[in-house]
Image 1: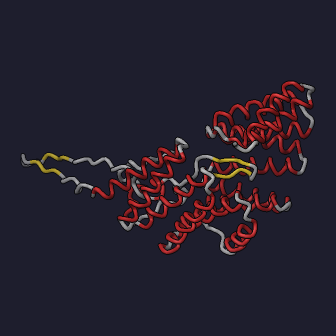
Image 2: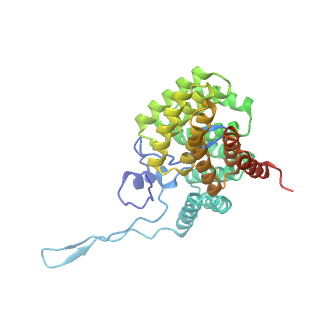
Length: 360
């Protein structure tokens, strides 16, 4: 559902001038991501989807022939101020770099967008740019900076009364606190947010997915399962396919943690099909790895487990996600060892150890 903000006359294009996007047409994250912390939906916000245009709308001068023989023309709108164009250009370049996962360059351009929107006193635009700068910093493993930027964005959205955008900041903060192991801060934020949960279905799904992951980390498996099922219903109501795929993968992960191998394998297969339909390459790799690990844990069809894990490792190499690759390699090594392929297992172990050793 890619939108470039270049459609003159749509609700999305007009919302910058005071009209809010319709529910369900807000900034849906298009990709999921997975780490040892579970499956999540990306927190990147497309600026155009939040109501301001990245590129100038196409201007059409409507000409009509006067029946009396004269002609009249509708004058074009006045040219856009240069400062507005500079802010939009910075956001457009940053969005493109984010899509390319060029995180260092994306961070520079989002910082530039933040500065340009500050010059315009466009607080809403500044908050969006801050959120996406935090997303880039997170990908660069600068979690402290990401958290500070999200707090700044949340403060602006709270001041402006932009409740939905504030909630997206909070969900991203939950993800960062989980990733950085800040358990006390994470639980305190959950307690605060649970007192007044969000209304839009997609935000409900995002929050409940995070809650389920935290409950699973605490060993509260029944509560986690209930949260994931509720999240799935919310994502279904929002027609968010990426959210549905992420929740299904988390339910598979939860089943696997409880040694419910048959249920986990069935969900992994469905999740893989959903990620494939979304062309979500990270989700595909994670579902392959999850299904392979579950087969290995169940002692079932070890050749298939090996095949799935090899494909996941290949994908992680291409994606250059070292932590995920190291985890998948450990499972592949165990799969090969279980089949008596000791020489191949030793080769995999060497690659895994090279990844996990600190750089000299």
